[in-house]
Image (cartoon, rainbow, N blue to C red; front, side, top):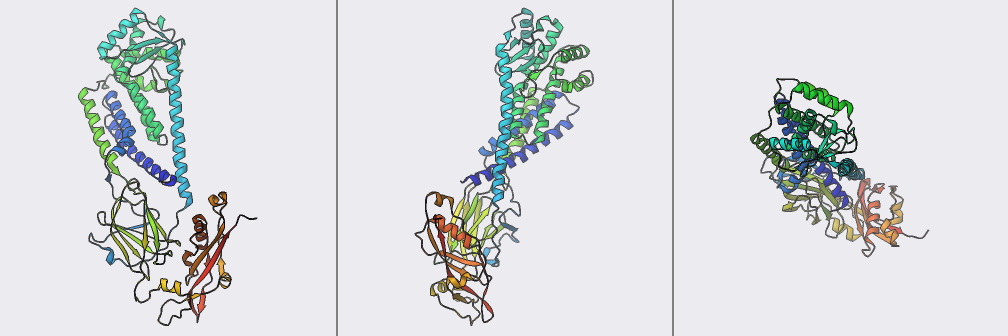
Length: 554
């Protein structure tokens, strides 16, 4: 797979993940609105389940088998139409000829640019998160363990009450104005300011109750997951909103846990306000540490803790399992669904040529998928090449139609997801059909043919005479690889110019020439335009020879 295909597949995969994660977050938002009268712990669980599902979505999309969605109509570089009947066969299709559409090089560059921009955003967000975690880890390493009996006794009592089995370490940092924070999962730590030794027993119990509630609820690891999801979906504002709401709901849920322990709301609110007024949070922003009193949403916390009618129930084990099961039931089908951009089989292309090996341009390529009842079409270019992009994986019937040639059919072609497929097609000249052009005989004869029976007339003329009839010439570009290797030479092309002045067939007469030089010559000459040649007032095809010189001499 080339780099361009990889960029397109990466972009399509990223787009599919974004759409599906947005669906998960939107459902979580609607559920949270429906549960606005319930406890903050339950809403926090809903948001956490949606964020974790969004983070796991790319992994499940790789692991789960594909459940393909119906293909979109009008995909780039091909035309699609629904079949009128399920039993429609390619035999009943008219031989419609369409012009080839060249891929825009800008679109390929745009895909690469988008992927690079996403990678840069991911790295920047992840680095800022890592920097914050490194800062708080360094501060914890420099802090002193809390050894006072009153603190240790209070920690042990609260751990038993909250059923925390993991060892919790309380550290006292050197900054007397640092806000109490909690971080860590397997070995959680509570970092207190340097002046915590002068706190009253009531304040110690309030602060530890709040911070240990975070540990019991596993809030820190959930917040880390939210920040990682923000780094993956950094371009999606809904993910940032979800991470912010998750943090706010976790603080309110811990407030409810403190109030459920018997502490009066007025006393609790007073302590929070006093600490928020005198202390600061040096680890704010990207550390994902859970601070005791963030000033950004204190007003809403005060309103909630002073409202006696608010539901403050904790989430039961049964409710936690139920929310996880619902999130999994939503995640699995979303991950299994393959959007048309995801289920594309890479590229299906190839080259069409006649029995003499010359390229056949403007041949109509038709592929039909009987299972999805769709037909896709494109046509070959000046060099006989064709390509169908974003074609869903599956089994197809192939048909190639070109006036003057027998219809080419392949009853079954299997396209696999993510794999490019190429096919070389040789068309046989039609035998004694009205209006058909016997391309092979005309190319070999080199004589003037007079069309008395309505067939196209073809003349062979010299290159010097033909050169005077060129109205639009594209100069060949010396391939950089050939120039670097010092390769030079002349490419001799046999060209058939159609009645409209466009090159129909281009064939390299000296096959020993370097392939890169031959390709550059064909690309340029195929874009030339000629003045139509008239015989007895009628346009005729002409056959000529074009020599393209590639020389490194100045």
